[in-house]
Length: 475
Image (spheres, rainbow, N blue to C red):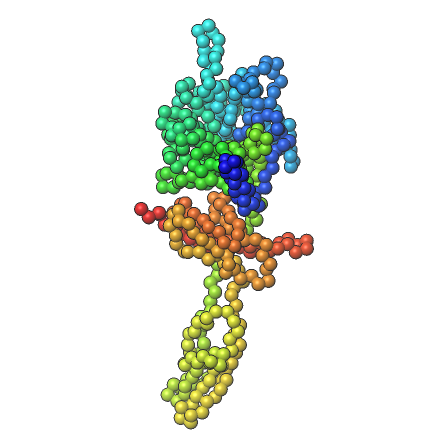
């Protein structure tokens, strides 16, 4: 009974997390081609659509299946058609084998493909056997055709090489493998093309790799690494994490929030350059891998302004007098009939916004007479109407920082929501938020306010930014 209560408690925790972050992304299972009866997983962008894996039946008359009698996976291509998707088709018959093929990755211009596939072992009688492991293979596109596959020079049938990702126009290769120096299971490695040869695979280290399986690396154009792991603080199988490369090393992995991660396996994320949309794989419905798209519902704030400083300090000087003679006359400014400031030309800082009545009096020292209200005025001081970010100017790397929008002053603006953009796709919602800055340097934080929708008008937005200096973490 205790075990059941624990499971229910964890599930409720997951639901509470979802309720906090669910409005930052809108998810859609791509059910026009992602089925409930077969695998669809590991999407990558190619041309005007997606290449993905599926174990749906092909037109082949030969029935091949794995040890669980499931169809082997093949690579499919599906094109965008307006706001929807076309019918999936085999990506290229030249990449089909009688075993699992894929997942794949492409250089940014689509001219190079790298895919994982089972090793084929020649037998003495001329036959072929499949090796339970997989290697990585390359091909180049010439016109409309792909060249023959070439083996990655560090393939080794004793190990499995899997989930490749090409970066830097095909000159850098990230992948997962179960090599000798893994922390356990699959680790993520990098190999670089140098003078026509691939360098030895280099393990990305403990901040990314764990004693569990770490798979599906994806290097965003900003340099952030997204990947999937059953380690770190994964909840419910595989979760999607990210890490930044700072001063020659990867920062500790951070988990993406719900609804990207769920209580089921979530993996193989790819993300647009502006962080506004992407795709990933999840088993959250029915236990079969499906492809999901996601789009940010986070409002866009163009041209945010720096926060203006409220200025309540003024110079009080009366210019209408013919002469200024401190030997004969005494001068005073009186504020709200209570505070007296002696002098003709003074500087004064008012305590804050409000209505202030000012009068200027002159006393003749010789005749001991006072000329009241030689000059007078009413001064209405207000805060500048703007969002306001209350946060330290300087913090340390990996320090938990509280940021508040409570001092925002927008009296004629009915606020619907407070939105924070920390860059690198890190966004939060709320009048108060907490954030870790994982990289040293100067970080621009944007706070945007959205007005509550009135009738049919487009809601108004206001946005400011504050630059926060992040110092290296003290040793």
